[in-house]
Image (cartoon, rainbow, N blue to C red; front, side, top):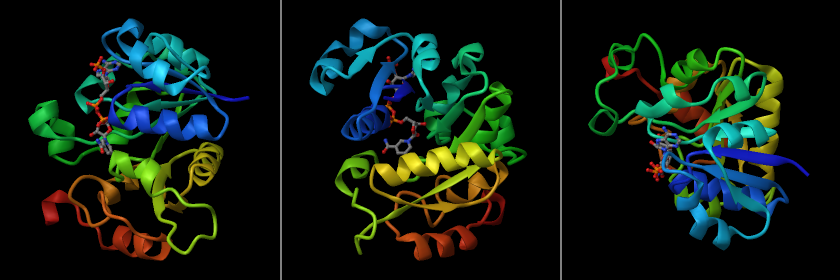
Length: 215
Ligand SMILES: NC(=O)c1ccc[n+]([C@@H]2O[C@H](COP(=O)([O-])OP(=O)(O)OC[C@H]3O[C@@H](n4cnc5c(N)ncnc54)[C@H](OP(=O)(O)O)[C@@H]3O)[C@@H](O)[C@H]2O)c1
């Protein structure tokens, strides 16, 4: 039995928790306000879900998801995530996150910022370009003609394999967009962003993507 740790238990955290529980994972959810504020959600999710602090969720996870506003990544616990595969779902919305200079000048990308904060973790960018409700609603078994694809990017091949297996298990094909530095190809306002595509179409949309400075 594997455990999915979640740092962030909002729209995406809740949807990924449900998806993982459906595949037999245990889940440990956390947020900024404390485990007691997650009691309704944990009750709804059932006996294989529990709430904890972010550090405890990080320590408990065989796979850990960071799914919080990008402005909050500086508070993600570093030591309990050492050596672990960490999925980053985050997007940059200046109206929510404030201006982040390195993202505004495109000298880095959202997931590279998290990787920089977690130097010994293996960050994989995933689930940032799907509307949260579609994680459950659009899931289809392998081979289904309506199956959609999700992109991944990361610098560690084994980590990407693990995340791809997780994505496949919860109902989506996977398209490898390359190293973490290529994650901008499905960031906010790109053709692949929050739009449903199968794998061949998603590859096309990733190839068509432009940097903000070239839009
Ligand atoms: N909504 C979507 O469809 C969607 C799709 C793809 C990607 N995303 C991106 O994924 C991320 C999460 O989105 P969301 O819609 O799930 O957001 P959300 O519903 O607003 O939930 C955010 C979660 O992050 C927690 N959080 C905030 N600061 C934290 C901190 N310092 N430590 C631990 N937890 C913290 C919040 O806890 P508290 O409530 O206790 O503060 C809450 O549980 C965002 O970057 C978003 O842009 C969203």
